[in-house]
Length: 332
Image (cartoon, rainbow, N blue to C red; front, side, top):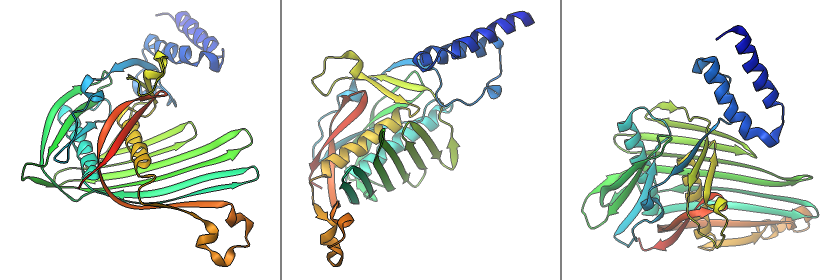
């Protein structure tokens, strides 16, 4: 290709990119063509917050239709990080993440505090909670099915059969912090989720931080940090509400990947389940009687949760372009 041809391609790209935010999707896709045409090496490409779309991934039917759980049978879905070159490692990571959920579902100890400040035009909501799962889980583990997305994410369906006399050891922990503050032009939100799971043979940990539209993810598997490609992850889902808009059933997990979006929905669903389970709503004046004259304290409501529950997945679906997971509390 001649130097004039390179200049034409570069000029076309720059003109296209200057059109504005309304054509951002076209810009991202055309940028891919730009790098292909110039035959640039991957390591020479600049880092971008959001890569091009690679299409909508189809998820297996069993992802949306888990078998019905009982007191003796529980089911969980595990998902690996995208584009892991080692298929054995991807399978083991997906299974480990399913075991993390089964540990929590078999008996979770949940403690948390949330504060809602509401005075005049000032509004702020903060919450922080910790979850620890069962260290020893009774039952046998069976991989019922597996699949793979076009982005290389391994998905497994796991059954925990408590009729079996087996048991496995796993150490798990989850921490979640969320903050929403009203500002002049809307809301400023941030969220941080960190968790780990360690068995006798494998260990994983992850930290997910979201500040408004910025999303950062650090995934570690057996001591190795895994790089998550900055794609626009999209998946075809099913409805869990009454909407007829087809676009609402497209799961849009930009920059996150399927597992991060799934586990975030898992925690959101769990939080909804325990919202009225052994929780207490207090005013700050009840907590600080000596400061009852402080108007700022009177404007704060505090919710305290301290629960030990076992639960199972009821449904997995799509709701307003995000994954939605619902649970029901079961007997331990």
